[in-house]
Image (cartoon, rainbow, N blue to C red; front, side, top):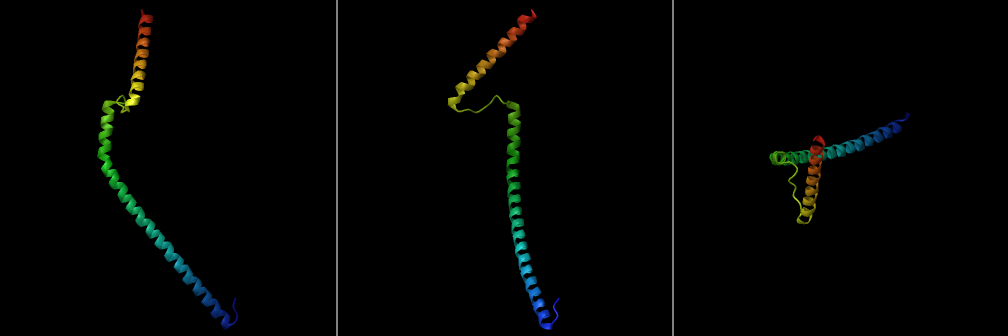
Length: 106
């Protein structure tokens, strides 16, 4: 604890300077917070507008996909042969399974 008047004045001056520095730090922190809040608001607004634009489009594609099923797949011309061969193999296997079941039942 300061004992003389000069020591007290020095301590008061030091404390006032600390207060000024802390106020500047608080002002910087508030400015950063305001910038982040503004950026967040802009990004949220942009996101909501994109979701609003894609909402009807997504609903259309979801309905269409559920009606057509997963058998309609867009493929590059080079891979179409692979998929059609795979489809034929699957059909042949299913037919042999059906034939096996019908011969076992009789």
